[in-house]
Length: 470
Image 1: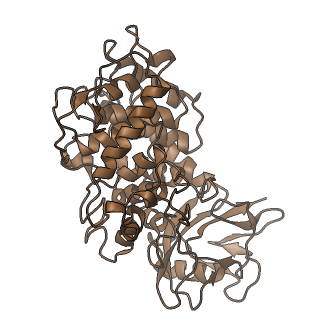
Image 2 (image 1 turned 60 degrees about the vertical axis):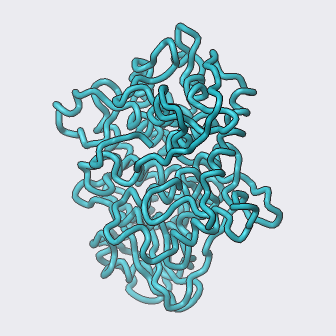
Image 3 (image 1 turned 180 degrees about the vertical axis):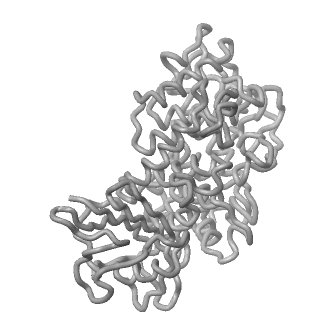
């Protein structure tokens, strides 16, 4: 990831681990051909698999190489197929899932970006992020950082990147069928904040700019512009939208004609170019044609491939570097392979390995978290993480709402439920009663809204959305 100041990086960057390859540099060419891209992907995957530790891990106590899962998936390699020395018991997916399930993960003082990063990578690895284990629901973990006082922000609003990556995680990590798992009302709330933070030059930066003309007038960052435009697009904004086209124009203004690189805040480098290209990819904008084919016949993808050592496959961070960087290799490969900031997991090559792993049932007596939104149909949206302790393998919507009245994070998500017991149809929630055709309905993991009853069955990891309306 980009080399940023600690306040900007949060949990997304760390010191790059350097390899020790003495390799030949692929000469820069004009628009990268399908054959060049295929070779880049093959060699890039080989390099990333070489980063796997002997115990099968990519991530440890701190941030290490776990973003490799998003790059591997974009390049068509399933994490479950990545094993140290062929030991399938230590495949990368199983080891990563075990880490995320650990009670002490991510740390004693977590921040929202820890859970956003994990959501994007778990999804790419074929781990349902809402169903990691009987006690780990990454979607619910993110919901717990909703800012009631500033709806649409996740985590402190000053750290705007926390909201951008919330949108990337909640919009990008779809359900197992590939459909959005969170309601559009929640996605729209984040889109509103992302729009409010777009700088006058069309891009974005890591810090909050909303309401501050001075900040809105400062020069944007290439990296964050790629991430923010991707966040808009995975939240349902079309690439013809003004916010996206302004971001596209900003990136175009940063192109270096002779190389096809973007001249970023930290100079020309692979990570910044990778983020920018991933933003274009997420929005369905071809980074090799039109505005991104320079007068010298260069493109951003051409530049990224020129940064790759071959046959070793690693990418250098800066053009003058003589050894590959793990983070640059991840960002570079994901972008060249056509990925955004995550990718759907490929079908595994390992015989018998499922595409997805998930904890689909509760463990009686074990406290689990569920993600809940309550939309009153009049612009009032509540978002929270709810702890439940089921007595069986499933629970009910009534039990979830009862738990939310006293123990939700943030508090106040649910203030009252009618009826207060039984299994009947909900007639009032948070003081909003059914009226004519306006009734309370519930959706699970992005399914169609249907009549909400206290007896509605809830399974482990279900992302619950309640909405009042016709």
